[in-house]
Image (tube, rainbow, N blue to C red):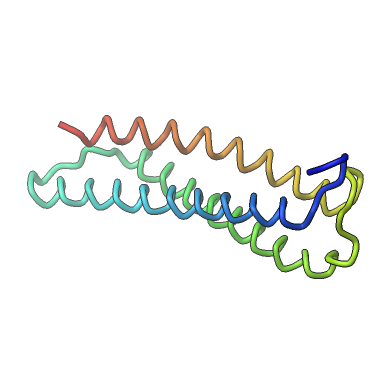
Length: 123
């Protein structure tokens, strides 16, 4: 962003980063659930309780919905391409900033949850 104007490349960069983070979070959750299944197979018991597994599944759903919103925003960028650079009051930027808030919030929550679950599953 230069001189108060937002360029298409600025938004595109942020979308790429967000998609990468979401895919990373989803991979981590998959690894965590696989580890829990390994423990069940080897010991016959589970390290994660039903509620923890449900929380992981809920976060996975939230992340997938957010990923879908990001991809939709990216597709819509082509319609606004002629308007760029745009100011902070442009509808597209307002929607982008809303996505940024959602992404920041869920990132903090997911990182904390992954850390907690790793402690549950480690020796």
